[in-house]
Length: 304
Image 1 (cartoon, rainbow, N blue to C red):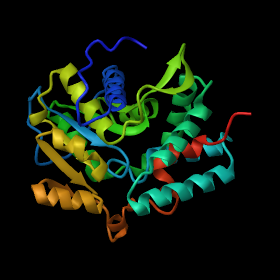
Image 2: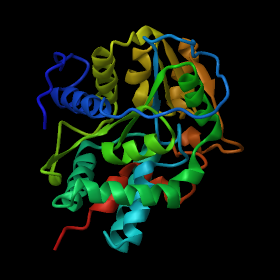
Image 3: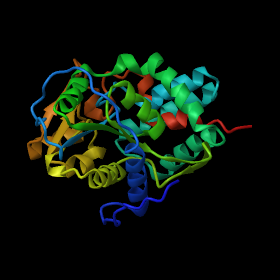
């Protein structure tokens, strides 16, 4: 991996691994640049403001359900793991969602499981599969309202990045298909195009997302006070708090309360669903309850 010459110092709000994960993701994202498409205007984008950009969380913000779960479905279809593993991780993710907390030991187990299956696979293989899975499971789950918000930023001449815990390669596929600038995602180490089974830093989650946005903004010469960020989850409050224009999109209960207390703008594209009150991703269905562990879902089966 190339040296990260523009890395910023560690901050007290994030661990060293969060900073490393964020900055590695930002470096990967800078390699992507894609064209624009058509859309509607939201409240914020300012035409011609080269110092402004927009950062969109993916799961339940841009897309119904979790990208990793949909990716896991595609890998299951391709015999990457077994049915019993799907059941185990679906239940584990349901507990995460209902309890509203993420146990560090469980998260570590999921992370190790995810890495065990990608180890030894080529990056190009996973990207090719990701293209197919996008068409099979993801394309029809994009929220039109959020897509229009992203397009409005593009139409104003601003750059737009996805920011997600999904692998950066898969996030890049989604960003490219949506015509966005690129994606910040979890970076798995690879050597000569083959996954080693290790992460660079940690999953791009919580504080690590904020570090990725901060690092990318520094590298690209952006003014965060003129940037916008969009998310459904209270876990992304660090990222939302970085920018001058935070939006709560399809928010969970904690984010809704926080957004209202700070007079942040809210958008909700769900209809007739109350699941968000207990932290379950609305409009995702029973299957997507397994969403946030997609890496794990795909990934618990040990290579034999």
